[in-house]
Length: 187
Image (cartoon, rainbow, N blue to C red):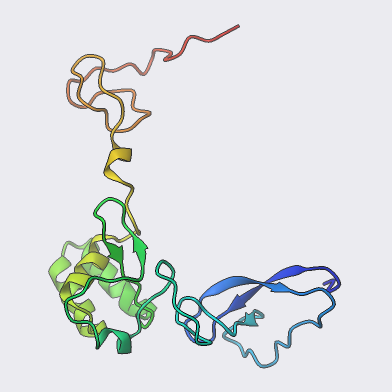
C-alpha cells in the first residue's frame, strides 16, 4: 500500500466495535497493527469514538448508544441517543452491551408474536425502562419513513390516497391501470 498519498483505512473502536474510516496522513508510517489483537481483524484501533465516547469526546445523538451503566441513571426520560423514527417521532435506543445471542433471542420472540416476553427479557438484560424496550422492539429494522411518504396521489375513481407514489392499482375501489402507459411517450 502506498503511504505517500492521503488514504483511508478502516478503524475499529476497541471498546464498542464501531467501525469508521480513518484518514492516514501523507508521509506517515503504516499503522502498527501488532497491538490490535485478533478482534480488530487488521483494522486500525480508534483513539476516539462517537458511539461510546472513547477518548473523552461527546457521543453522537444519532450514532451513539447506551451501556448498562448509563441506563442505571435513567428515570422517566425518553432516549436522546439513537436513530430518530420520523414516523412516530421517537429515538430508537442503541444498546451497546446487548450481545448477539441475546439480540437473536429477543428477535425470535418478536417474530413468534411474543412481544411482551421480548420486552421483559430486554428490560432484564439491559436494565432499561420498559418504554425504551418497547421502542426498540417495535422498530425491528430501524426507523420508519414519515407517514406522508407512505401515501400516494389520489385515486382517479374514488379520490382516496393510493398506498405508494408508484401504485398502479387502488386497493380501496379496485381500479387497476397496470396495462396503461401513464405518460404519453414522445418520439
